[in-house]
Length: 301
Image 1 (cartoon, rainbow, N blue to C red):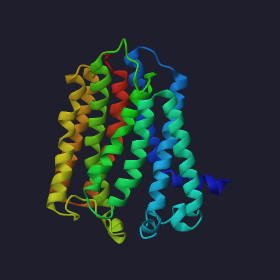
Image 2: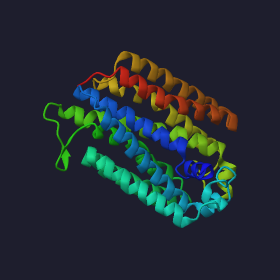
Image 3: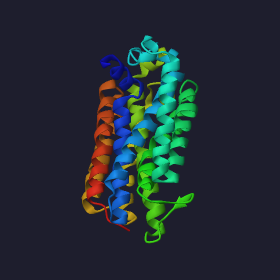
Image 4: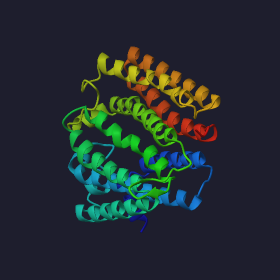
């Protein structure tokens, strides 16, 4: 049983899945605060459903990439390339997680359930095979990567047929808040994943994967990491500009964006794995920290 749990954690990419669930959960609470009422049982359903849907997407990803994973040090110990789990077992687990997770989310909100299905499809069946063909995969992958805030936010609202019940909620709260949350997470992924791609370039190259903008560790790729990090500064002002982010969130978010920019600039000059890691570690801290602060500094529209 211990071995199965360990392999299951690797199949669903536990740390990545928990990060996604955290993002969706915080957005759910923001949506609940917008309505003035937090239904904790629904939050629990969102957490469970989000975990299962994300785990399913990661499971399908590993099934598709099992032969590639054998070629990389960072992935060769996963259950499929190591032979500890066969494709059939992984497929059954992933299908069950995807179906159950989607059904749970649909119970909360039809839009949230629909977005979860779209997220699985886009991540597993568009982004995953595209990784071997073009660095444009990072752009495509940023869409499913930014959907958790949308899923979480809309899951906080009751369904009204195929739409949302928001009689006492402004249209701006239904459209602007989730789109801004989506946009910030969308932009965040570029310095995050390009920094990872820089650090892991040699390992990725062994499997024929090149995710840097130019497919190489060169000046242009380094500049793109810097430029994408710089974009986090103006993005930090969006919640305040649209009226739902307070001064505390804005201050912390701008400081985080400036750290992003500084380390991105340093990397553009140095172009080393060590400088790329600083961008990467900044990204690990930036997103959960700013999301948490926004939750407590949120101003209902």
